[in-house]
Length: 71
Image (cartoon, rainbow, N blue to C red; front, side, top):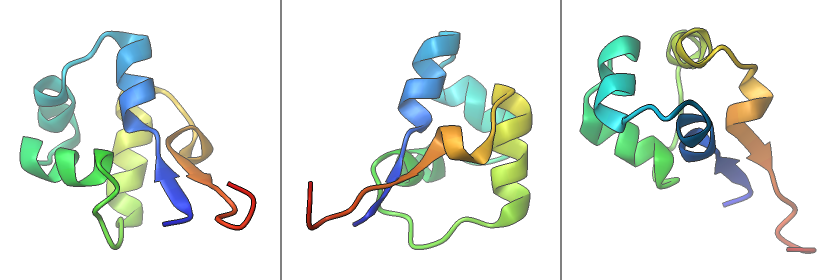
């Protein structure tokens, strides 16, 4: 999939656990795992907004497009 989710990088920078992050964002830890592992098919803007608010980052810090042809 050409969109890579970088939640794990942002969590590591802040030394934040998945459980703590999930609680602050309003997701289940299982749903955070789905996002982290790249298995999500969609993300609501409200969820993306909450993740950015909790992590103090921009959407581009969490999502990256990778060209599959050159990767």
